[in-house]
Image (cartoon, rainbow, N blue to C red; front, side, top):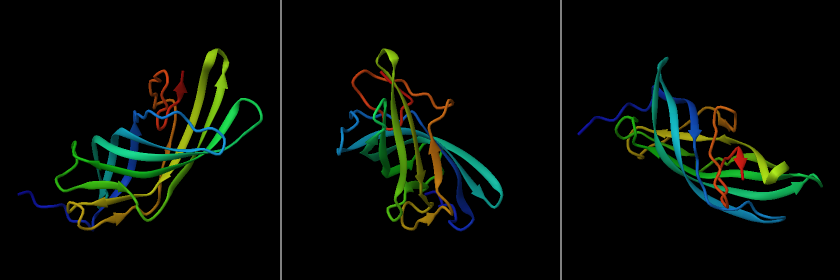
Length: 171
């Protein structure tokens, strides 16, 4: 049986979530939806100044609440990553990463209508993560939230009739 990595010298240095998927339409005025999604991740763990990159897949759940619109073509939503669990892939044995159940990971999503029936979607979360290196028996919180933004290096294909957890283009 592999020996777990000692918890003390390790911390989460960076986190990238890529290609999240979901299947719920955004809510209308006053509405709220919860969406479950799979995610591909890249994470960098810091061990006494020696950065270790890892990657794999995970699962998450987000909540999207309609906040307001600008009276024109843009809608605003309060967004919260309710849960996220990352394990496996190239992570060391017994290593788990999760969204903190103690601190809300909140952000904002905007959806702007574009000509031709397309939409521009911008989104970010401040994700509070925790790290376990003993299979979940103890957890170490990150010192600060990891801000996940939607940017040009994170394209996600749009599917007709679906809403991704974090999508840049919706058709």
